[in-house]
Length: 327
Image 1: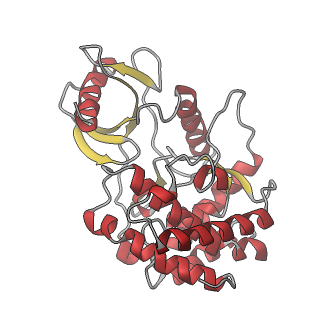
Image 2: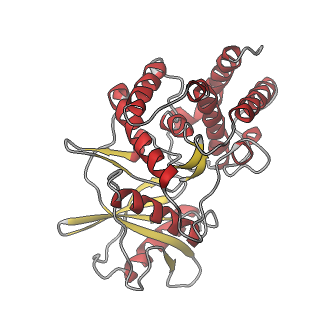
């Protein structure tokens, strides 16, 4: 049985533990780090998330929900409420009827709104910056409960010796001159991050995946969803994550300026924070090279996957020149 069929079976089995949701065939929405489905019943809808096998522990998933709901309760952002199962769990371990498959599942209330269009990113990035600043300000002041456990996003866990999303060296078409170029780029990134450091003002609990796909916009509000990657990392990394897969667009510089403007309306940014932005963007781009290599079935589109490494080479060359290095 393949991964998709296994997740489908778990999604159907999960409904047995939520009496308020009609028995139905879940509608597949996306396959990425996890597999997400839509459920509909009467006037209500829900999002069912089937977690990737052996990726995060139950406590780590519960910790994600604690932080996202704390942000919501404090009025920092709008995000989806979590359903409690009939067994009293927010994270439900679902075993299929045949007992052969088991996954962690979470069901969220469905939020109204639409993902912003990529061709209109400029008009949204000031708001993304302001949302990020509010979340970071909350993160700096918030004391996690005992036992809170989320991953750390640093150089070692992204591009170094313990990569969470696979090795960049194993990315698609990473060989020969590309391997050499990326190696020099990774070393430059490491040096810049060592200089920047991880003090409390620069490193803390972040969303880590605030792409436009994880925003839902209505006339009244912008909601933030999918905290599955949240963890401890550089605050400025949230900007880099917001630019995932579109780092090569000609208007990225304008998007960055808008993000900075929106952020500074809420919280200050020092010159060193601004200076580290190109390094954060390049690190995220190489992390995505690794992710695409280790997640061949993820929904990213064949056009994006096919040319991604080649385009990343051009970005790496430009980054090294910007950093005063010879590409």
